[in-house]
Length: 311
Image 1: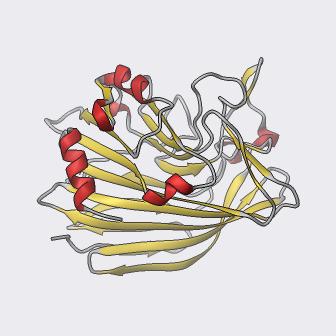
Image 2: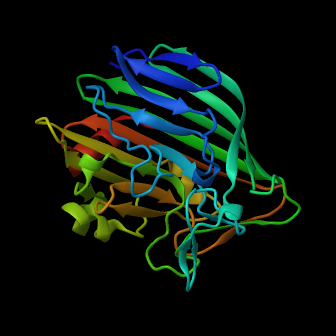
């Protein structure tokens, strides 16, 4: 049986979700001080039911990596990801005039009802010069907290509408010329002690450490799991990233971006190998699930959990 979820809204700053006295996640929408890191909401900390943190925040290698966040690394010449921008033939450059932001406009709902809680947010994607390019409705829902299973789930959905007079062109560093660097879309950065974790996928794909990550990099699959042993305690943590069934019919096919070393990262990349366009007035929609678990899960455990907790 799922345990009750509570929600606390610190107005102007964050929305926190808790279960059994543990803050499972904090959704921070207060604008960041540094525009170069691309001001936008993010989730940090993200924790297991046992209270173990499974997100990293502003690591020294990438200050703009902030827990779990929606990104767009290459969007019609702008960078809604943060930090340096990749330019083919020149590498990564600190092009501050390319860095856009995602402005929090309002919450349509912040609510809890028994074993489920959610927020519904309205945002505007703003290019560096101040032009409003897209309107977004985002829903983040926390549910299925099962202490006996040591796991809970977060569902993240996005509906984005192009409000420009011309198409929005979505890409990635790979579409700009850098091989196998197709990061963009919903992105997770793990804490440093998860570096070197194992990456698993369906059908026996994946494996140990960076070899497992390389086997899943750039592939299509309904789910991907990242599991690792923690520093300082005899414990493991596992995160499962899964596509909702309707994502198969989305505007563009998604591929996994994943690394175990030198940084633990996973992204539901919506433009890994090819650009796609969103025409004026049109919208796109995706829905994702992140399962946060204590323990080292194997493929059978992942597939059993996903099969038992439908969409």
